[in-house]
Image 1: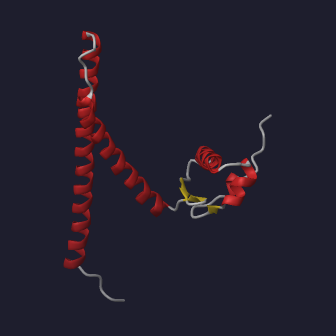
Image 2 (image 1 turned 90 degrees about the vertical axis):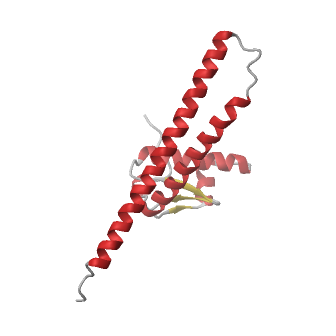
Image 3 (image 1 turned 180 degrees about the vertical axis):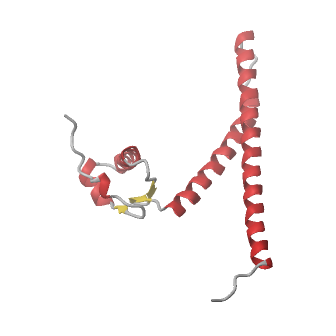
Length: 152
């Protein structure tokens, strides 16, 4: 028999906010670090129970994002992840491999190539997406200028 969760997942809608007091009532955190962990647990639980919802930690509460919010937040996270991947690939050459065995050195070199390849590929894909998105927005704007809608 599964335990009933005190939060009604079916009642949640995009744009809802789950206040700190609700999170504290459910998880009873004693320290701020436990509260942050409770937020992560609840956000994960909501997203696993309701695949149509995306959640973000917003100060002292959890926010069920609207589709427009989710688009912006996730885009920002993708850009940050790609930048992080690039930084990590750039940091790999700092590893002193003088104490490595031949096998360890080959493995590290392979990981270097993988990290650089992933960084380059993801940055190219992101740039292509942004360029295509900008071109499509420009085309829509140009079409609107060429063919303005008649006033009703």
